[in-house]
Image (cartoon, rainbow, N blue to C red):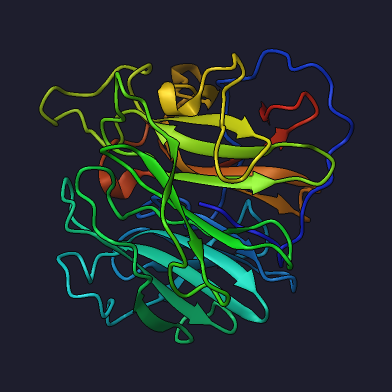
Length: 338
């Protein structure tokens, strides 16, 4: 999920030839409410000392902390009455993505049930992000197209204050798509374009995605989760291997509307994707995904956050963990810092 600090962009140092990416290692410390319903997090800093975290389930759980590392405290839910979108799952919303624009916070969310394309994407707004301040506006108007996409996992992107808005979405079927948005970004403004697909081995549980621009580089980065998401030891077939489980991937492009390739030059529409972070049994990390990235002033670094399983704790849905790491882009590709 994508998060910004009031639309600010991180300035990268001069780029050098890309080298090997760090792919596995420990997460950074997290205290407070870091375990439980922390799937698909979206983290935003309010500029006044408080970090807000929005996560899947119920009516979008809101937690706050003085640092990305915590201590996190659950405050309540964003939409206690659910959404006005009349579909199954309207009280159990997924994959929030929160964005600040012109004095207002916009929260995009998914309405769906597991394995269904009877889905939709909605938006709510708030002046502050606090519990009790969110107003639901319902669907943003992406048309249903069961042959190509599923309307879930939304994120909003704007390069700068004078640039158009884009909203990537997707998961399952033909994976990740993108639509232009109106200003203010409450509804769709045009046709969808295709950003990412693995035609020979589609993501088994879906892909969460966002992309993020940086001043000082010619590239836009598309991060997405790939693999099997949320099995437990008692699931049919048991746990997937580390290679088949959820993992965080990346492609990049010189255009925000397509042409994304991985580090080997493979088109992201043809199964391309470079591993950024995956399972690591030696560090008690399994199936990381549902990621977001933002520049964190507290860490003075770009930070990637995500949910993951800590095998020593358990695999049940309410045992998932919130994790984070710094990212280094000095090679031109994101490398996790341990």
